[in-house]
Image (cartoon, rainbow, N blue to C red; front, top):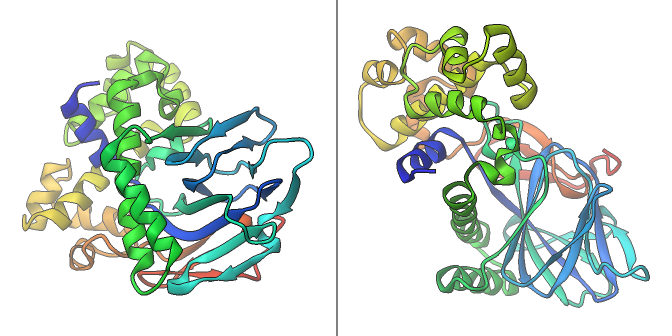
Length: 337
């Protein structure tokens, strides 16, 4: 995949990552997470083990690895041996400094130490890149000197959490996540598990056409023609692959590019609107508010910092509730979700 296409792809497809927990697992133990409405990202700071998603196979992980678990899939993480004791993650949790939650399996020994984050799917203003993920991913960065340093800094923050730990770890986590995306999009291309939906080469042509030129007068008819398919066949295949219609995808891509322009430039609203395919500021503002919950001017003033108000379930069935810039972790949420 060409570098310019990768850049457009990362611009158009939103990823919001929030650090919220530390998991410590003693040798001979493992943590079990239920399914929930968020993508889970585990950063292995210390120790080696394995994880299993749903009824799938056990996959090994090593220190300085990133594990991504798709939405609505339960998983178990720790020691893979048949004699290992399994503990539901929500059964032994406490609050650390700076709002982080700690999950413990065993006596508190940190034979395996993880920093965990969530990518919410409830923020519906753009196509979430990891919403395309159907299978779990694990990627090791032990050979990367720069990212090895990022893991070391995360480990130091977790060892002595305090003021600013959450903000610092999120920056480091996102750095590693971008490296993972670069690996899977630049080098693996459509063979990446992120693009199981794009293994249909005809759909891929249509999707990239939207990403590369969101302002073009896209329609189901001309996208179908680009894909070399009939309108009905294209719409059906696209909807089944992406769980949304082609024009929903077009609008979400346009609005995500617009959101980036709002927070990185001083372009007038009319120019932003026209640059992503809207006839004027009024229809653009109406569509933007419907997707983001605020008007473009307010969004620009926030600087893309404020998650959409709402709730989604995090690991161990915890409810993460967004009322402002930071999530509130509600420890009494249903663990059987």
